[in-house]
Image (cartoon, rainbow, N blue to C red):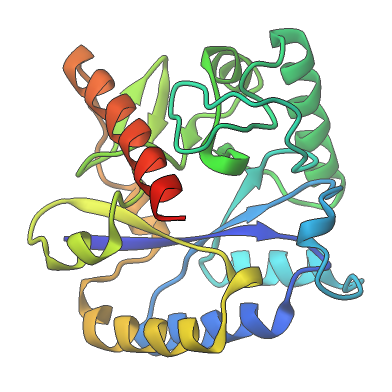
Amino acid sequence: MKIAVRMDDITPDMNWENFRFFQKLFEEVGITPLLGIVPDNRDENLHKEEAHEDFYEVMKDLQKQGWVLSMHGCHHIYSTKKGGIFPLNNFSEFAGVSYIEQKKMLEEGKRKLAENGIVTDIFMAPAHSYDKNTLRALKELGFTKITDGFGKKPYTYKGLSFYPISFQLSRSLKQKKGYTTMVLHANTITEKDKERYIKIFREHGKDMISYAEYLNVKAVRQSIIGRWKEYWMAKIKFLLVNMKG
């Protein structure tokens, strides 16, 4: 299985040491990831150090090197207890919010990124949670791609292209066919986590691809059966994670 990489929670005040740790791993295996940039971070949990004033210059420089940029929500504040149509979690910045309010937030996020020189048509939902109003607003605002869902190849739904994430990374690393995404949260990794990721990248680097290559894989239309399967896979994973936790 070919594995692309995405990094969530990219902000000026993130844990830069951990970010650079992953950057080094990417360089070792010769790939570039997708970054989820929060346009206007108001989530104190993402505040790890003083904001770097050159943040957007760094992001644009990485983009020139082949890194792909996406919009990761707007404020990264969870205002509802809804999982939406991909219920990996039971909280959301968007799912359960009115269409009008969602569109306002998405417009705001898009504008803030553009003011800093970043234009993208890729959306990354905080907590992986969104609903049909989110998709409607995204499409109307010119977004064409979403990094989420389950499956072994990109698919289309409601006029948008979805690029699935891994249901279980250990299983994805063993599979031979298909494509998926490894999700990384640099802010929260421990030293033990770093050792595990070093091992994963060195053992499976040959199976990893740049996110730009993933975007070139042709998306297929998702069936009704596929839609229901994805929903229940997300629901089951949510239950299993909570039972384990």
